[in-house]
Length: 279
Image 1 (cartoon, rainbow, N blue to C red):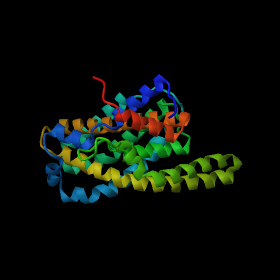
Image 2 (cartoon, rainbow, N blue to C red):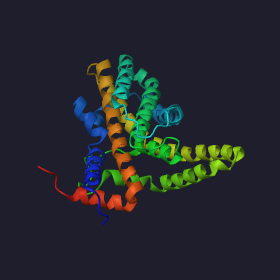
Image 3 (cartoon, rainbow, N blue to C red):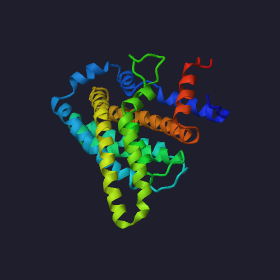
């Protein structure tokens, strides 16, 4: 087993606490005081039928609007509170309009969340001009946290990564290769940009399908008649907080993987997970 510094071992433990936390579904059910199945039964069919298409479109637009507009300033301190307030505000507005406002608000909150994820990646020292980092930002939205049915001995994080492994490995290899070719001239650069778009599109399609399920649960929780606008703000805040935690944990692990290698960090992570929690 690779010998980690004490600081890096603590970093893995911190990342694990974030990544193995209860899923958004569990947190939302606790917040509204109703099982998510009950909330889903109250969601209008019109909204249910459109969510997946809207999520796909929103995620594509969020990548363009967020990842390609943030300054490329690795190690810059992240601003999670700013993004949290923005998402809460959009949730409050949609809360006034009930189910009708949810589909309109979805692209706005998705873009803000993607921007926050990229902001966190940057704070961990990653360059947003790196295509593989952009792919990793998209990957965050496939990380769900721990479900009630999960085996305590398993890692929800590495299970999620395994599901996307073939796509993300292929995407990352392609994106890294594309980046290395961009110095070959303008024609090559144009071709590389086109290839990068196609490669990211494959990843976005896979992630959007998983995110659509979680987004449906979020919307179901938002229509529970608690306090309307306040409820929408609370659910949106919980939603972005969940993915900010996923992003923070994910990019801590990715940073350490650059130093020690993927397998070494995975082994250390799973070994630490077996240890009893400190009392």
